[in-house]
Length: 224
Ligand SMILES: C[S@@+](CC[C@H](N)C(=O)[O-])C[C@H]1O[C@@H](n2cnc3c(N)ncnc32)[C@H](O)[C@@H]1O
Image (tube, rainbow, N blue to C red):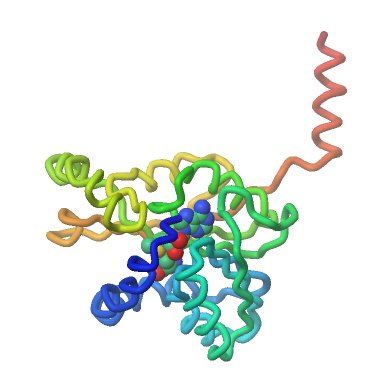
């Protein structure tokens, strides 16, 4: 979390043009056909909130630790026709019971959360079996692009509210066997070489049932 009023104040003005030009279709895809209980992880100022309005039956919890970002998110939620509750919380230690959500949405959040692996553990915990984790992230480039990202990363981290320019979040997500990939896209061409952006949907695999786990313990004893 940055807890930096300057970052919170500049976020929406800086993002205004990308939001209007390139991000809209990504955000629309993130919410497509969602219903039920949805967690917006690292909601920021509420960039996803207008998109939730197009859905008939979602109940959104928006977790945001930065007070300046959260204040703007609360204002947006109050003006929104969607059912959105903004919560002060940390993705690394979510204030929800296991299996609370039908879907978790994270847009440009895993790049900033300090321990993104722990956040993914928490996402896995709070998702129901068969629930979806939907993400939109910028990631480290390949080849020369990746080396440039490595060089710029410390300065970027300092000015961009703790964002990690060179995180390989795509590898983390696609390598996690608690999920099945439903869809995954990465931008190509010049834009993809300068700043690769990935978008995807992962389905939470079913947890082994108690009956199955007990069965495994019993059969292990028999083979001792
Ligand atoms: C780049 S902004 C993205 C905001 C928004 N999701 C969007 O799409 O515009 C990253 C957000 O992650 C939040 N964040 C940082 N650390 C976090 C944590 N530990 N738990 C939850 N959110 C966190 C930041 O405060 C910030 O609002």
